[in-house]
Image (cartoon, rainbow, N blue to C red; front, top):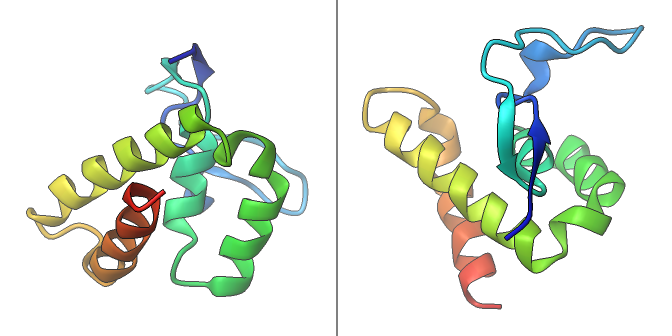
Amino acid sequence: MMWVSAHGDLHWNNITSPECFLLDWEGWGMAPLGYDAATLYCHSLLVPEAAARVREEFSDVLDTLDGARSQLLVIARMLRRSTHGDYPALVTPLHRLADRLIGR
């Protein structure tokens, strides 16, 4: 698995609009290739149009073996946090995505 520099917590609350700036860099460091794209994708699952756009824009990374591994890593992290009350609405979509990835 290739490791690269990453924001580490890339989701919609850390992106400004209309000018795109990334906020909240305290978690940056090295992460598996595709980790930031996977994080943004997983956080988008409740808005199918946004998820499809993220998937399309980052397909060159997400559709690789490292990208699939990064998605599973993000899913595991988010599901672990869900046991403490975070992301309740994302639990089912995250499980569905994991099932699709594992079935590759």
